[in-house]
Length: 326
Image (cartoon, rainbow, N blue to C red):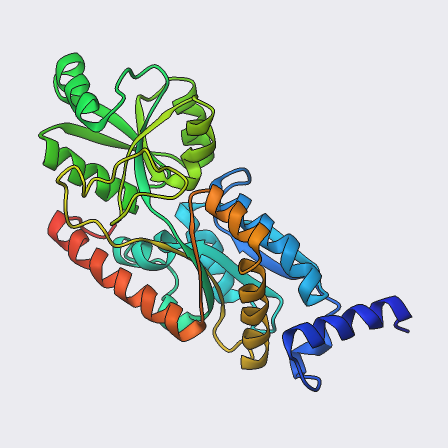
């Protein structure tokens, strides 16, 4: 038996999403949607996932549960998505690293996004940046370069949230650009990297703006440069590397949601409409913007094209770096 309250909530959810009839996947609507996240709780991706899940469950009339499956830069969660039943109960929220980078740097990633996943929708772009720990005196990129040269003979460690990631290649590019010997120190996610930075266990880190922004605002660390073609609305005083004369890194990574191959089109369409509804809400837009994201809904086809373009940009950078898949 379905009580009146449950029936009403489903009716309202269906009306809000424009769903007509009763698609096959609707028979499973009693079950929660598991939103896989490939990074630990407390990191930037986890915070974003929990914000969206909370809003989506009200609109969909189903629980949306964030399911953290950290490991190998999101590879564990991506493999789980591939193995999941395509019945509308398992989705994956991630960013560029797991989708565009990992399959190019790992010999056997265990998944191919273009053939194993369905693009449900994108909702934001963001940028990576360089931040220094509280014990590092530099207040600009120029001061950081001089500090490394003068205090450490040009050699220093830089934290990154995952090995063979965009931040690792950025460390290589920064090292080459400024004539330094920077060594990327990989962590299992941004949260442990941040802990070491705040404790002055490592003098600098490269990661996404959303990983650093709250501690930057609190004065616990300092962001001194960001990538992308424009300054970030949440960090208007932090210059881009392009402004500083470091060109070629203007393309911005993305955030989005994927489903297993074979997931019914009716479910994908209903979920992406819900996603569009949620991210267009002023209060959600503001929260995501405050985290350092540039919010912008992308429908499945548009999002797939964005993913392909970004993958091609980084394919060139990875090849030019001489990196060999491991």
